[in-house]
Image (cartoon, rainbow, N blue to C red; front, side, top):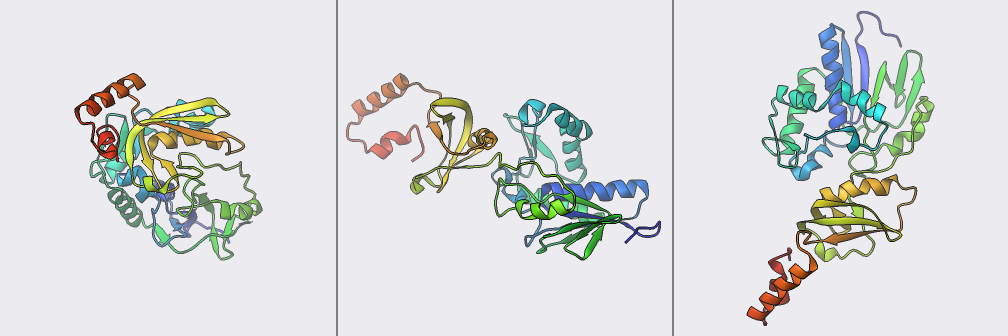
Length: 305
């Protein structure tokens, strides 16, 4: 299949998550600015677009951070500068404002929509796609990509001049997983580097399910073979399988960077702003004043139940 001057340039995007929707909008916008006819189609394996996007920032949609820099990424400096030089943090904020999503920055530099709702961001992205004529096809998993003359053939039936791979990574199984497509991509001549999850929760062996739902501030230390690899302070979420939250997700990149993901342990300090002597002094005072106070109440003034 060839594309002549009267036929639209067909672009396929695999995955209707945040990156897929942004890719589709960018392609359609660029084509419109240049007066090029384009047919952009986004294929989504799930029932609706943006499933993973709706889970970001605990439902508030953490769009970016005011302190973005190459030191925050596990990649080659040249790669970071190449990408960030084309579309930086200010560009991202300007883009969202252009589609009706105003933002604010919290005390720790995190950038959120003023609505503090993920669905408002997703709805704005979907509307922008519709306005630009982007086609979204859900319940369609791309299982094969074959290189053909002048383009690529998806699932043996959809031909596209260009294909954007935005199928997700390994951090959130079930919300987008590129692994299923890897073998097929080799047939299209795509070289794939080893994939590892990052910025994800930590599954902890034998973790007590009774802690599920607890959310608190604290310090988390990542230890391997008695050596402290890194530590982070911030929100910690206790789940039925282990630990999550910003502090744990920051540490997860160190685990992902290791060839083996066993032998690690997490040490949690629930009261990082007090040393042992200060905590003991506090407990001694309460015990002296109310010696019969139940343990749960005794501790609840410092840590969540």
